[in-house]
Image (cartoon, rainbow, N blue to C red; front, side, top):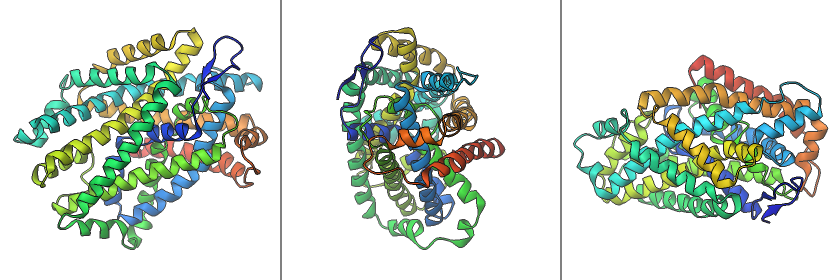
Length: 446
């Protein structure tokens, strides 16, 4: 596969080279810094295995209802959310035809913030290579200098430059090929680190905490389920944007249910790998595994400074994080890039350059750690769940269950499971609204 000739004769449309190329790219978009940062500290905070049970349940439900619907919807529309929603609403004679701009703007806003944090990762990777991170007297002060006003401007621009380089050549020639290299390396690096951590004295306490029988108090606590739901929802990139646009490049002969469940499985494996690296390491050094946001940039670097071979461990760790961040960033940028390219008939390089340039102009005012935190909270609390709900509502309700079943059924040898339509129509749409409501009430659950 390479090009789709069905775009009305205007311009051939890029396509994924293979089913697994698509799956790996989607896994790359889903596996991000939250897998390495948020999942381990939340698993630690909510009782280890007590958190894993609701998390896995939520991933299975969301994978076979939310991820599959966004892939199938994008494949039907042969475009990103803006044009796909407009096509669907026009076909059904419904208003608000331009509502797809919401997830597009959400994807752009998230990418703009994500690029700043990716710049921090680049700075830490260089600090690990050069020894600057280990020479710093205080790790907290080291991070404070990086996340201050214009404290990491050059690294932020470098992150955007990498995003430009990855996105310019398109889906099959660039993004798919990069993801096929970066994501396997991510897993290999974390497996290596997991083996190294297992050799540390005291690491066994972390495994006990993570895998012993669940604590009933945590398991019965609604907060455990709420934050497991939020983690699963955002980890699977459910926002009505990136998964739809990646699905738009997928061939109709591919089984989207098979693809979506594999995406969910590999995303969960990434989170679990991160947990079995981070939690035992933190236990081994007697630190707090539930330290929250400082975990990745303060707590873990403190461990690297103390452990034998810590410099090499830090290099591998931040390189793996960089790979996850880069593949997520290029997915977030793809939604606005695709819309600009299709709507204004710009060449791929021009569309990418325009989106990256505007992101750079916006991002320089967000570089302060407190500001970027508030920015990302607003996008994740309000825009992402709204985008996910809009996509689900149009797909399952406005277009209807027969349409949804037909689109999900393309490429399958057998019939779509009977339970999937009501689960998607009622449960998943309800979950998207619930994530929005709980995020507003609790100040974010992602």
